[in-house]
Image (cartoon, rainbow, N blue to C red):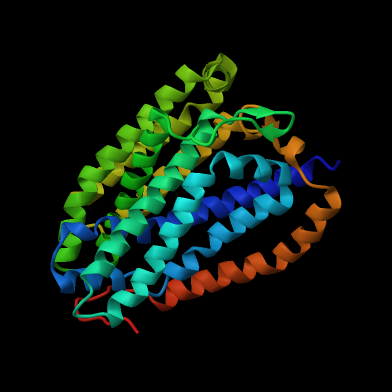
Amino acid sequence: MEWYLPVIWAGLIGTAVMLYVVLDGFDLGIAILFPTTKEEGERDQMMNSVAPFWDGNETWLVLGGGGLWVAFPQAYAIIMPAFYIPIILMLLALIFRGVAFEFRWVAKPHHRRWDLAFWLGSTVAAFAQGLVLGGLIQGIKVENGQFAGGPFDWLTPFMVMCGAGVVVGYALLGATWLVFKTEGPVAERARRQAKTLLIGLLAFAALVSLWTPYAHPRIAERWFTPANLAWLWPFPVLTALCGYLAWRRLHGAHEFTPFALTIAIFLLCFLGLSISNFPYLVPPDVTIWDAAAAPSSHIFVLIGVSFLLPMILFYTAFVYWTFRGKVRADSGYH
């Protein structure tokens, strides 16, 4: 087997997942923050800030899941039954959120149920993603190359904590996005909320960073052996530094910087989790080479991705550039 092909595909899937977390994370976060105001005009402004982007942001979830199925079919066959319930909940919640986004505008003035659906669907989707993340960190029981656990193995205190952490993290992304993209009372309230949410996200990140090496010796060995520690100590230091700088910028007049620093925190946390688990795709037993499809399958799909991925990136950049600037209170969704 060409050893580099699974590495390339692991990088592509990881990139797609990270792009999904950042791009769809802030619009899920905006919905999570929906109950913090009852003013219809402010809620309209919050939704309008993501109206041109939200459906395109979910493209990366499709690429991540589809890439896993094509490039690592054994991992897909293990992960899906291990997390059937949270994954189904996530997909239903995302559908609920999407329907609510569109129906809310046409149902006015009788749209309160769709406000609730928008908040509930987004919050459940974020929490379910955290459950899956926590399950992958904790590890999946595998025997003879198949999932050997129970249907509720994902329901543990650690995974629930990860679910809550993702909800808080997405809410922080949403708050800093509103600071960047809106003005008036919405932006001012989001700046205040972001300060509290930033503390919450850093607390969850610290708790996961302490819990995982304590519970899993393989992770402790990866981070705390003298040779590895000499190379890896910048990651937690940089994460703390980004948190400090974000806190300072939220107390100033900065608008884009808090959002960028929040993205940096997410990226550093994602890299830290990758370092903790590489090369395991299904910790603690199945590596990327164990789960990889045939090299011919990797090459065939990689040719298609090499054409489509630049197009998606260009389109995404074009949309964000086209709809740059502040969203005012009187902006409309069409």
